[in-house]
Length: 383
Image (tube, rainbow, N blue to C red; front, side, top):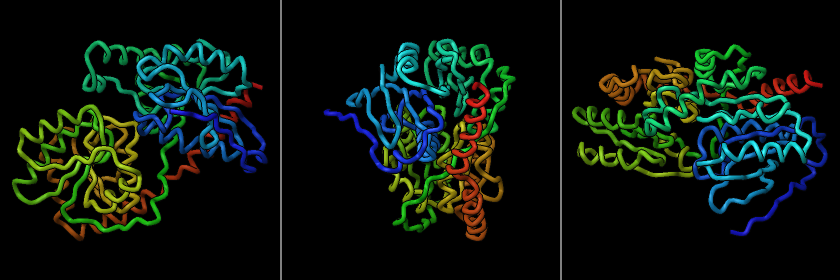
């Protein structure tokens, strides 16, 4: 693949005074095929900081056919290593970037394995977390690697002793305190992107969907089991939207249980919002999330959600008003809540209206402004 080193030359970026140069270290950028919610969060907030006049450099791993360097949407992107070994490349790449650039502050996105940047620079380092896996990692991978991740999370407090943390949710902030973090933790919630202008909201009474990455810790098998329970009493059009390494096991489970569930695989943003707008209910059965972004997106389309009462998810639904929380792993309770919203048109209508109002409270612009103030205070305190 031929790549060009693209350069922003628009008058917008030429006229705005650069006030901070921010280096963000993340496992991948939003163009990487493994990108998920962490990359959405990164892009939405830092792209707004760029528009507010700040310079953002992004150090990430390199997927096949990606350029080693490019400027994309105002981000200066440096790619080294692969997703499997990126953390080993970070120390050298970080030192090189600091030697050749004036960096004001470093952002460590602590997703699974920390980068321990304070060991390699005296610059202010601000860790940013979507969520800590803790014991949930043992659902996702083999014992040896899971133990490695668990240990890496456990020793975060020893390497970021002078750092203020950014957390995506109160649940993640609580997890940080549980592992011994005594530093200040700022909570900056997600916003929601604008819905496609051509969106036609037309909810189908029987359509229930899971939307998101297809991973073991997402516990999508609970949805499969709930669908089987619901089918004993009524029709349901069930769909699993997204892709991931747990898809094979889920497909085998669906075949074994002899139930009909559609798998769409990865879909575009426009198609995703079509599904939100057509569904009667969106479900999120995960054991743990940093923040239930897809649940908020669904509610922005007036679609109630049924979520496990899990860290991260319990913050994105107003239980009994915009959707329901059920005890994680309670398949009968899960199925009952879905059925209630499918059968009771009056209740569904009230929930739909409340969901729209609730989702409207979350703004990427507000999130970016909040982060900007935090970073400027950190930078200002070191000059």
